[in-house]
Length: 113
Image (cartoon, rainbow, N blue to C red; front, side, top):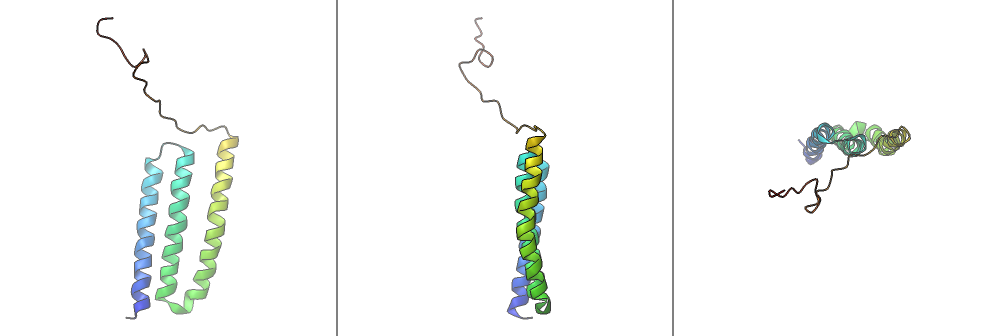
């Protein structure tokens, strides 16, 4: 085994980790905008890393995998932007946590009252 194969396997492993964490982020995020962010970053980095790893493992495929990586680097952010714009135009509101105010009567009740 050559050193490029080991580097390729490391890229594939890193890509798998990115994809797993991205799917976990999509599952855990509260609204469409956060899910878009988690999914786009993870799928872009995960797919690019995995495909570059395959290109390093199989050097005769390197040029083809490089073209695919360039396409992914361009297409994923553009598609995410289009989905986010569609969500905004559909009036989907972002998730907002209600901030607690200790002096607000709704949150603070005196036991003497």
